[in-house]
Length: 300
Picture 1: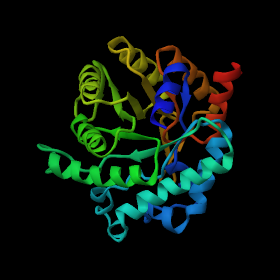
Picture 2: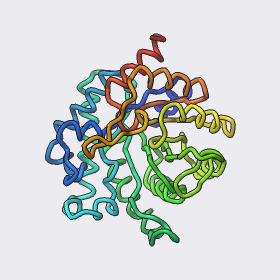
Picture 3: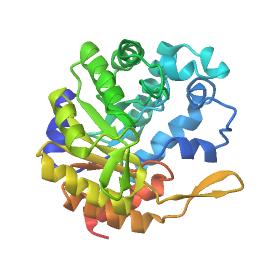
């Protein structure tokens, strides 16, 4: 499937799915629980999310393995009891079954790898070999289980993104989409650790990323300008997955106020700015993806 995905993204705009975490919270996930534990205890709920995104028009479903690296799981008592390999394999199994049941062709399963939650010096004590070892274990499990590609996402430190990408390439020849999370500052776009778009593009392409871009943190309007900035720097395939606006805290819960139609209108502008793939992140739902699909395909 490697060739199929890369060929697809070169000849047409690819639609990724939307948020998983916010969907699980709506389904009853509490702050005391480890989201990845639901892969084993409530796999049906996760399968329903994948199915809803596929029905809405998503061409890539992302496994619910965002925090399923050993380092991330070990950060909580509940996570320590989970088997890394089993959790990641289950994530692929659930996504693959949803795809097969949909009966849709030219659809792909992306193995999701998120940050460890730790920091490199001088902020923290995370070591490069420690991060890569954890990512390698996760990537190998995802590859063995049968993903079509990897998505390394929501990386706030370019150094960690590089270690994840190197880990993926050590265990697989599958395509790797790598997206960092940026904030908009008076002087431009920067990651939490101060990485610029120029440095991000140059580094990730040199390390062999198949597709690069950004997700999370920014709302769709800001992501238009970020897409333009990326496209000015490179001709490589680009992917962007913004949040559903800026969250507002209501009763201790982050609520996203942007509506699907507004999000979809911005998604079209992100594509016009140079994106080869779009999707959604925090706060987006199948309705957002359905609206993006309708707007991209039918102009509605």
